[in-house]
Amino acid sequence: MRRQRPLMISPYYFLSRRPFREARIRAYIRREHRSGRRLEEILDDRAIERLGGRNLAWQTILRPDTIVGLEADIAEAIEACDPHHEAPARSRNGTP
Image 1 (cartoon, rainbow, N blue to C red):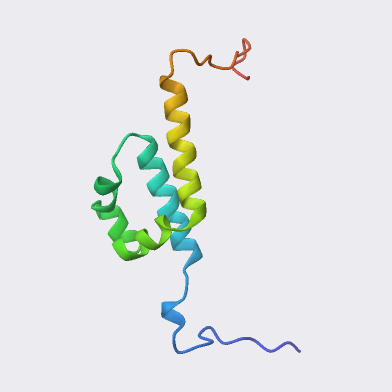
Image 2 (image 1 turned 60 degrees about the horizontal axis):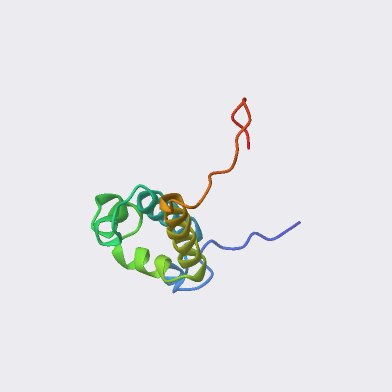
């Protein structure tokens, strides 16, 4: 018979990382950033408070994977605005 591990392994459990909350905050920030909102506006949004608060949002933003994602979004937006950049050709059914 397998022993079940207690939910709270340490008395400081509440201070540990929250990967699901971080993932939701990261997705929200990227989605809103892609739609053209400034980071300051996003952080002041009520949704950030519901998802975990401004401190958790800052911790999430400072993670390398979030920074890389935001940089990719910015590079994509710059390419879309570049007049010399050609969009990928699409077939009749809408697939590239």
